[in-house]
Amino acid sequence: MPANKVSFKTALQDGDLKAIRSIPKSDLHNHCMLGGKASVINRFYGEKLKPFRADKMGIEPLNRWIGEVYAPFMKRPHAFEKAVEAAFLQAKQDGIRVLEMSMDGFFGSLFNVSPERAVGSLKHYHTLVAPEIDFRPELGFPKTLPLRTILKHLEPFLAFNYFRSIDLYDDENGQPLENFRELYRFARKEGLKLKAHAGEFGDAGSVKKAVEILELEEVQHGIGAADSPDVMHWLAANSIRLNVCPESNIKLKRVKSYKTHPIRILFDHGVKVTVNSDDALLFGAGVSEQFLRLYRSGLFSASELETIRLNGLS
Image 1: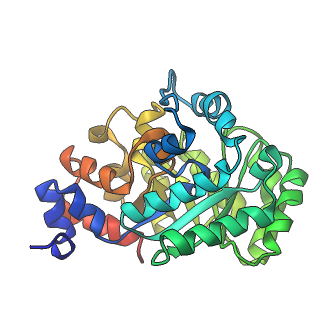
Image 2: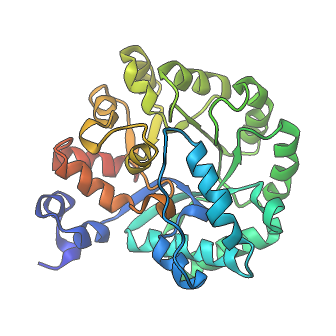
């Protein structure tokens, strides 16, 4: 039977990664500049980037790797465009059909990439590499930036009427969430879907607080919610989807293994969850590999993973 005729459940049961990749999936938590596999970046770089290894739990090892290893690459001519191309190539290979991939709105000021160049590159490589993908571009900003700095860098991007959602990431405790109320109210008025990282390393209370203060429609990660049945039931009752990244959680030492990942607890409490790549460049796994690992670990049945796959396409 041809790979594209095999069902998702059968592909999982057979351990057929090629077939899994051929079946439509979503990637709703993907950071564009870190979205391509290292093999593609290495070909352009002409040497292998030093692999990412976290020496402790948290976001600090990731930021250190970006500063020490990746930033020098990004200063090379056309490296920005190659990173965008690599992200779309990865999504295409992974069978992604709905892609909510974020562009860091502050990135350009660090590497001399104008909003025009950023938007032009996204449009060009979407059309060139993967026009079949329903691409829903997203703008993201580090939580450590002052509000006025974010607003200053947000508005030029909004002029293109191109982006569909907003995200906040980096250190969860970078500053109080209340500081971003104005930003998220403005983003809502501009028609953007409201998303933010919460509960990646924080607890259940931090997830609920982020949703309430910023009026979020979706949470990136959110796995801290698994510590509280009350918060999980509240998320389910309010139809707040969590865009989970199992490989990222493991590689950043938040979770020990697939077998113990709290996505199972969230699912069992009725929370709508999806599986996403986060940063394929650092963590090495696309959405397809993660679905297969979740199945092989015994955490989910093939039928349950089919439900999770469809969550992202609905």
